[in-house]
Length: 348
Image (cartoon, rainbow, N blue to C red; front, side):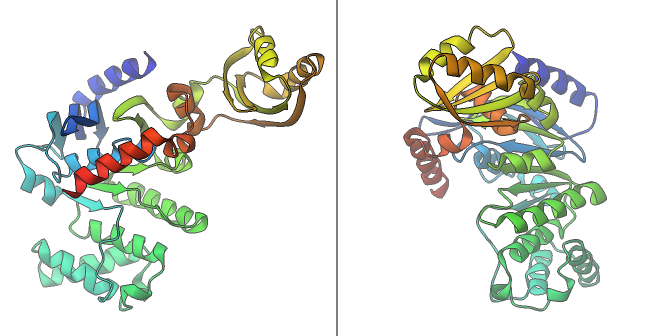
């Protein structure tokens, strides 16, 4: 209900404003398997929009349809004003793409990789020189321009791929899991480059990620995907406000069922989920309610071994809408089967 209301409002607003991307009921099936299931959304020019969810949710399939690498089964998509089913060449000239898998020539230098890519877009020699200088400065690789890519770190390679995606000055940049496989420190540096790029150049960015903290830090708005569908879409702050309070996690030792029965009677508990012996509770003023929860457990002979209080995260939002944690979902048998099916279909 919440998601449908926000989606309808936003689609109406974006029809009256300039949209870099517009999608309505976009669907992709592989031999009857539904990878993307009737999704609709719009992205304003200059916006940084995220598609987030577990591996196999349909994020990459969505990007591949919008970048014309895959043909949609049904529905409508528009990128930079062009229909994805009718104007593939126009779209490809208007977008940049950074794929999950590295696509650099490691036997060339960083500058040579950019030179080759720019030539493929028909950019003249003098203009190539200016643009290569600019994008290398943007991603802070000027001093590494003549170094072979095989000697680059993982973070440097990712930054070079972003520079390559910008060399032809696209209107829209697609980033598919831009920090996958990077360590936490390097990942944070890449986040800063992406945010800087979006704010300074004004390029519209749509990124996919299964790192909820990445979407929270970067995105103006985000859509949470699960099994090919959108389960929620809004700004990160509004998504977290859906839960309406603090999140208190309690690890218990004893009869958790009896404690759950007691907790359900508390009017100030807004939501509750259980993962084994850990209870996650949403409530207002959690720091004041923790003593009452502990007393209730003690009266029932349930030992509270650990209590943690925090503000809601996008991980909690995913849990709220799907009943699963994103990390738990990634490890489930159904999800592994879905991932494998989509990967095989993309490989054909």
